[in-house]
Image (cartoon, rainbow, N blue to C red):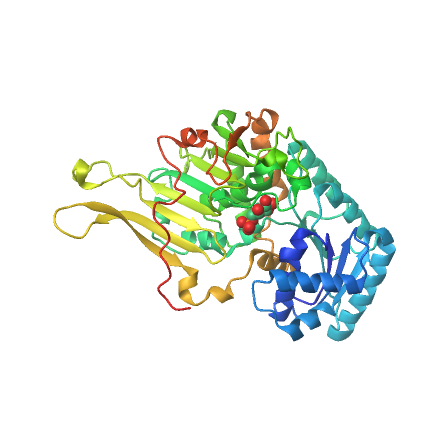
Amino acid sequence: MSEPHLIVLFGATGDLAKRKLLPGIMHLLTSGLVPDLRLIGVSTHEYDDETFREFAEQAIREFSKRPVDDPGLRDFLQRLAFVPVSEGPEALAKQAAEYEGELRESHGADPGRLHYLSVPPSAALSVITTLEQAGLVERAKVIMEKPFGTDLESAQQLNAEIHTVLDERQIYRIDHFLGKEAALNILAFRFANGLFEPIWNRNFIDYVQIDVPETLSLEGRAGFYEGTGAFKDMVVTHLFQVMAFMAMEPPTALDSGAIGEEKNKVFRSMLPLDVTKVVRGQYKGYRDEEGVDPASDTETFIALRAEIDNWRWADVPFYLRTGKRMGEGARIISIAFREPPKSMFSADSGIGLAGADHLTFDLADASKMSLSYYGKRPGPGMRLQKLSMQFSTEDTGEADEVLEAYERLIYDATRGERTLFTTAAGIERLWEVSAPLLDNPPPLEFYEPGSYGPDSVQELIAPRRWRLPFERKWRESHTPK
Ligand code: BG6
């Protein structure tokens, strides 16, 4: 359990606060994971405490994944206050002193301080200055949202400026994909079992796909997305981070130092991106969306081949793909095993027809995994078909225990637990390997909404094939919930 906390939420009236942060922080309180808290919302809106509480109530009722308990909600709302940016650091300091006084009185000790910067990067530095002026930096933990810069130079500059006020150990750069239960399951699966780790290398693995198509489009975020695009919004952050979990060496311990070090080694081993192995796409109709430049060059889709040039992964391609307005929403990591060197099965047996054997991780909130393999089709003769062993958290009756990614990460930050947060060095290295693409982006190709990207994504991966859309659906649960 963590200690009582003062939480200052910058960007408190924004989309992320509404969908994830306010419902998530309330859950941390009602579940007792954070024993007591006060929260000060800050944003450019001219709200007062009452209007902010109404906003929070509506957000929680609409977006909480769990049934809302009315007394619990009322109790949470009583702990919220609002300070508009226009009132400056003095007003923030005053409210913080009042709330910290209450927590100190109830618990007899200084509360922890957690500041969540749910603001665009251009605003992050001024928020940090506000915190300094309000005297709220000491003993604080500060969660920062991506993008952490837009290239190597800007990331280095941002980090240098932040470090004039905050110690690196106070900064928690959040990547919510790493807080997903299913992402952590990759670590459990790899390092808690002796079965797969011996074959987790180039001798047995042919290629890896990390495929995150989304059906969503801009969701009212044109201002952010136009200047960002799919590569910076999803690949530099989420997909590369997940790739590091999949590819890293066994850490010496399950702590932030050891895991961070192994992830950074993966990033250091990455080859700079080869722009001839990148497909940039834009869905047809994007330029007509509200807030989008009619001549926009922003990609809403990206697929690329990444390479990790170390002993374990030399010559194993990692194919990454993500985009908006695609045929389905999914978050799949597929690991394809090499085929057997010789086959005694006849060519018409069906061997190889459904691709290589795969281990698949589905990073849905309640994680799923499957292992596909060739087996005998029942009946006479020796005909083969693709079978699969599947696991879904939904089948275990433990699905309600799953913490949403933001809940886990905010909880971890309150405890000073940094394992699932990204480091300045790792991020700077990712910008470094991305430089060829940022400096020389290939021309956009257009794709139909509802598709899986421009046609050339097939060439990118040929002679292999993208696994989505699956030819075979996940099996429905057989276990009553
Ligand atoms: C966010 C991106 O970080 O992740 C969004 O900014 C994207 O564009 C989202 O839709 C996807 O996250 P999740 O958890 O819904 O898959």
